Image (cartoon, rainbow, N blue to C red):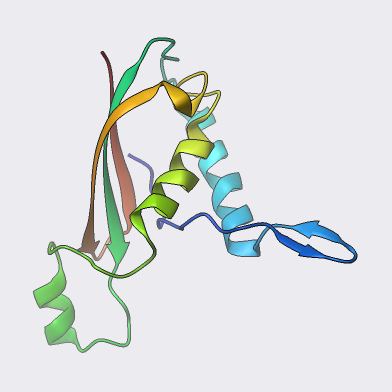
Length: 125
């Protein structure tokens, strides 16, 4: 489990002065790498199955009643699933597995939660 609010991967921005990555995504990658290094994760070398649950923050602009109703329900906002996965899988590259091309099967879901986090299960096939 990673105690970090999920952030979708963003495209690198290109200007005439150079290329840069969005600040929120860069901070997310830095924090994810720190949390991954703190865990002693077995590095997989064979094909793997990944199950991921993204617990997305409930918007603070919603009323307390609506926030309580949404807690634990499926989330349809907060970034595309493929961008959330890209950010997570790139952060785990070289730590939990050699390369994300080893992922041959995955299941994922987004759920609203008062405690934003990412839960991941990795199994060797």
